[in-house]
Length: 228
Length: 88
Image (cartoon, rainbow over all chains, first blue to last red; front, top):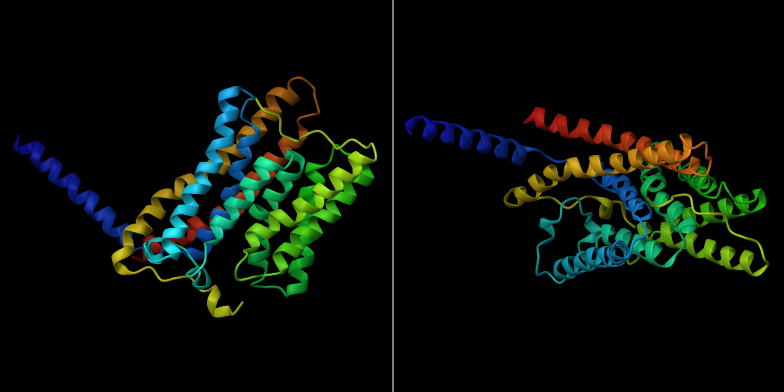
């Protein structure tokens, strides 16, 4: 009895020590935000899920509920009902408007639900990969160089996703998509985040191309990810 | 946008619980994209490579892109976290 009490006490002490250690850490918001970006690539699992009735229902409602929850939280925060201090890694300009992560989520939601996979996948990857790389390069290089490198990275992502298409279509889509993504990143507005623009601007451009090529009788390529 | 606005909001001493939650989220932030990348590569291996089908090659490249990009940002993130742990 006495021994088990001692063990419990030791364990509690150990947990307290770990908690104190965690609390004393000055968590790096910079890298945290970058990792949050690359984490977004996980949403591509959406296309791996099998085509079953109940899973399709889940695929439709899960992203909507997730984003709705984030909207609810952000509404509470912006109206002052929740302190901004409770949200880690927010920037100063995000104090009085919705956080970037919400724009990111809304962008992903729109792409997953309303755009074909061939358009959604490269646009999501632009936000997840090209955006943080451009952000990092901005610390060391000039604006022009950053946008050129960003354009090349985005173009590569579009080329990969459209590699099954005809050569002319592949290059047309890559150039249009990469231009849209860089344009979405260049124009920084207070009320509309670049995390949203970098996804939606190229998606809209690609959708126009998609409709046009279909109108002229050309067939867009097959999707890149096949469900289980 | 002004440079000052790009700074991060400070976390108060009383809100340290939030930081703890973020630390506990780290395995998910790092692990999940890795799992998705590996799943894509596995999909390519079993349905593409073993059946001699090139239809799944795109999944291999996507899987590699996701893995590499995540590792690229995870390393400095973990390093900074580790440094903070050691300093305190």
